[in-house]
Length: 417
Ligand code: UDP
Image 1 (cartoon, rainbow, N blue to C red):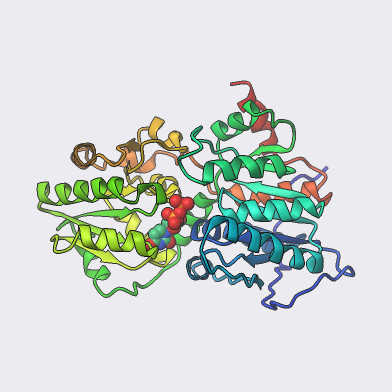
Image 2 (spheres, helix red, strand yellow):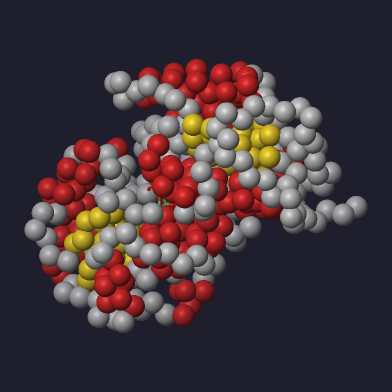
């Protein structure tokens, strides 16, 4: 039996937002639903893998949760949504968002009749997609399954969202052995749990190979100073809702301390468009030398800066997973992380919002030279082939591939740990 994953020249591209189900075609439609920046980054490699193989027709649906950032991140991969949900959010509450998404998505699912719905991670979009598909008896595929902080308040509401999605999913595509084990501990086991790696590693590696230009005129010279050793570049991001207020004040005090203590350090901080985050960050860093606040960077620009950074300071999940691909150490600006693989591999440290701890960890990591060894350490979150495995697993689920994905074996091994 030929169990190799074949490449295909029959790439399928569709941009028609009015697309409807066509039962005469052989390749089944699979909806991939996303609404935020990390969902765009992590789903894009799967869309590409499906197009390359040509046996599944990906239908990329934009939920509208963070419309601009979702579209901006997709554009770095040359992708745009096939379908956009038209949702109303007069109050901005989570319950309103969930209700709107489920109702609107249901109409599209009835029209599209996909063979499966793929959701990613732990957003309200993912929860809504899983619910709407489950209620229509459409199999749910959960990408980045099994992440757990074991604290329902942090990250909020993501920890609860991903546990709920797990209850509704048919196929659980886990990024790491730890994630597989988290699922096993919750009684979610069997051939439908697969270890595939995190597609963010596929994303970051493919984008790093793509040349890109900066939109912000300050960034080329900042990069140049970093690459020629005239400065040490730090990349900082912060956006979590549980950081707002006192914790974010602590994080900003930590950043000010780092800049004061290291005269050759320059910080680039692409600020999240959430107005509460933006106001607090801009106010807290007003007039601080060598801290460059920008708007959200295009994904390709962000990866380009990351590749020449000496240190990352972040409360972002995705950035914790991407930094090891460039050998860049990471100070995690959260009390707990569901991505302990990087901490255990010695490439991330947990600092929380304490300014003293942030400055101390940053000083230690900056003092350690960025030698060859740290650059070649494998990324604990994946090997860059997760999307190919995801495509194969979904094809198997739909009866298009008689071979169970090879990654199944790894999941069984993980169970034995
Ligand atoms: N990112 C980006 N531009 C930026 C900041 C981050 O493209 O200015 C990317 C980053 O590389 C990562 C993703 O956005 O892939 C993370 O998104 P975010 O931090 O919003 O969400 P989280 O990962 O915490 O869920």
